[in-house]
Image (tube, rainbow, N blue to C red; front, side):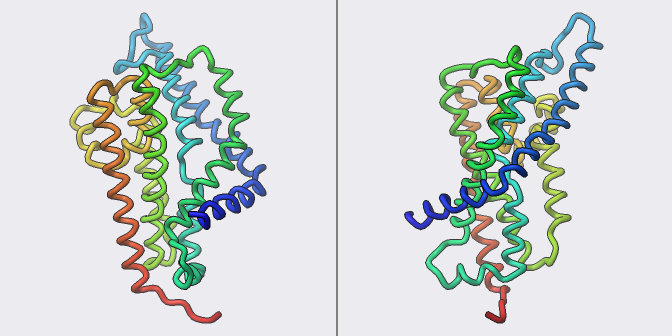
Amino acid sequence: MKKYLHVISIGIQNNLTYRFNYLTRTLFSFIPLFAMLSLWRTIYAGKVGGHALSGYTEAQMIFYYIMVAIVDVLTAVNEDDWQIAADIREGNISQFLLKPVDYLWYRLCLFFSGRIAYISMACVPLGIFIFCFRNYFVAPASGMALFAFPVSLVLTALLQFFLSYAMAMLAFWILEISTLIFILFAFEYLASGHMFPLDMLPPALLHALAFTPFPSMLYIPISLYLGKLTGSGIAVGLATQLFWVLIMYALARFMWRQGIKKYGAFGG
């Protein structure tokens, strides 16, 4: 455990070297968010009497996108899959085959150190963004939601990482995986709830998405906070996330074992 804590410490120091990049990335990430908020404001402005749309009032819809920004800052994977693929392609993983360091846990430590560094840089612009929309901000729907939301965030972060790790393992077989990463990102963006709340979809399509990990990556934690999931639904939501975390962890381990059988590095 001590060695992995040291990895986190070194990872934070390395990531803070690029703090300006994190700051600019955060600022520019708000541009599409403002565009989505403007779009929904226009949609609601055209509704006579300000009626709710699929159960969301204008204020609730705006707050939904605020939560999207918050969850993304806390849990999203940034370039970890690219870095893992580069380690495989360039032979950097050879050292982990000779040392008592588990590469998956090593990368997980770097992922969390990256999140800590990113949050430290993003908290100021994110705080300003939240302040500008403070009139739309609401507290968790219940005490249970207040407890379940941070648990859900941890599961979301783990799911994001293990899925990206498993995708990066394809670098053992494919020289360039950027196209596959972009395809996965596109599916995640549409099917996780980034573009719109998933309960706006037809029930049949929403039910079909329940058999994929994507709703667990954004929609479930936000639904817990907003009170869209209550009672036993909270336990079901957390259990669903945990199920997909375990599935992706098992997949990541399987891909590593199979990839190592094919891996070969030469020189020194």
